[in-house]
Length: 557
Image (cartoon, rainbow, N blue to C red; front, side, top):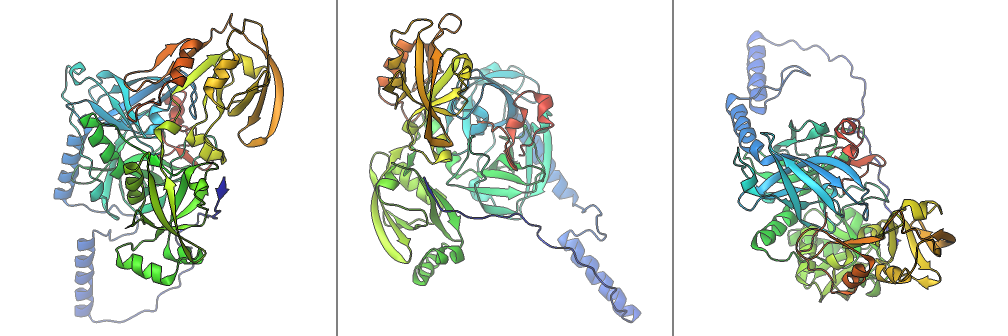
């Protein structure tokens, strides 16, 4: 995969410096009194504490407003426990806990993070504030963005009536005060008040082996949240949810929130029982300021035209193009600056995704600038759901599934292949690890999971198998090992996520039928809390082992 590299450095907002003594100034008593009164009046209007470090006074009306907001929101916020019964794609088997909140009390719909729900089969439950527990089933998760919906049966709650929180992405404003209510550090109910600082942060990158969000803005605030708070609502004073708590930076108070524009769209479609179409050009774009875009070749006249059209913050530039994808086939390259999609200005992530989601299975006309030269290309729009694995095969204790769009993007690979989600007994003895790509079995190529299953047809217990594989990070370096097929202690089985309903399990023969059938409908869903790696970690996966582990997690938000 081609990449446009950018160097990013974190730095303090201001540097400390010595401050000398101020020169004395003699003033009259009347002038001094007037100045003091004016200063006090100004500080009162601005709610500035008169002494450094002293508490900032709040009006009683403001406190009562927040109290009402909290009281109304609490019945809608739940703690979520997720048991991942199989490793699948980016997620390992295990237990995590996080947060969610009711967005439709009548239909029983709960919003949380994608990395909480996970891509594979799970058993999940929600715990309401009165300690009633209900079972959850996954209704939808987005193939790219960090949100998912669970369903529960409202009639299962016998002692309380849940409320719902309204999604209001249009109300997000810089400097607005916000509340984050959730299962922070596994404490079920924790309340953080802070100020929304940014609405235009590019999506954080968690690690090369885990789930990562992209092609969206994130909000930023010094929220100080930690593991278990993933999926918490970010509320304004009106009590509306303006964002979804998603992640943070380890060792700091920085918190990252997912905007709700595309979440609100998906919820409306889900409520109506319609599919949630998701299109992709198999490329990654990031937001660039105009100064950065000018260095990439954006003409000054194009900048003026875009600013006049209302695009004041900047433009979208291509940073990654997946090999063999639609964008690569159309000749799109990293460094290209997007101007128009189907003739409409396209300077925001929401505008780009809306255009792609309308054109799944078709094509879009993309106008771009490369090195100061204007170009127009027609790019087919692929179905993101078709690039998301929905079936696994378990042999010899190992779990394999088709390579996902997520992992393909992480490693710059074509979105195809057989991926080892868990090596199990059969592959661990040959030192294959999680993340290996199986290229051939007994000399037969395995470009798809169906081809892998076909190589095992008729194989008996103890049959030797030669497996050629490579690692995700070193695809050009292949290795050949020999393993023995074990069906005595590890019965082969398979699982799939059908278009409607919960995961199903079956035999290898059934897997062949599933894999050869039509692609799942766009509403098909499957159950990542991200395993914290590096400086930035996903909030909820901190508790991958237990509630106790959550308090020591590196994930924030």
